[in-house]
Image 1 (spheres, helix red, strand yellow):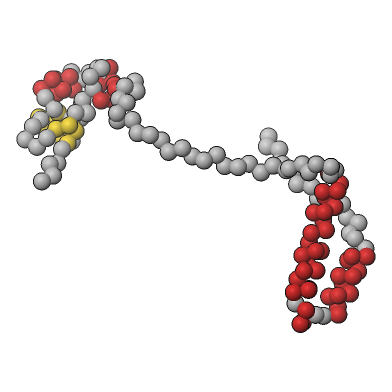
Image 2 (cartoon, rainbow, N blue to C red):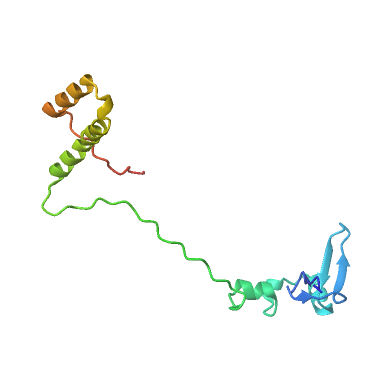
Length: 145
């Protein structure tokens, strides 16, 4: 059998069925206190955060080690960075990067040998003969101001 336990509105203590003092305000708000001590302090407008034995005080001052749950560790997300290649200058790396799309296109054409089109072959030859004179764009991080 499961017992429905409630919590004291002042101290935060568990209250089992048949125990505690129920107080109903004029605005029909229900307060349940563990004992007369909690009820008395509540009516005298004492703050539970000031009293060392209340759950609120213990939580604020990090006293309850047992109730403290272990936070899940988040894996650090890997930040993108550019790896340097030993013996290769920036120009060589950029030239290689610029050549990749052409190589991919060539592979595509080779894979589709059955439907090879003369126009495509001519276009590829032309591209290989005259590499683009445009400088390759370098990705730069945005500066946030």
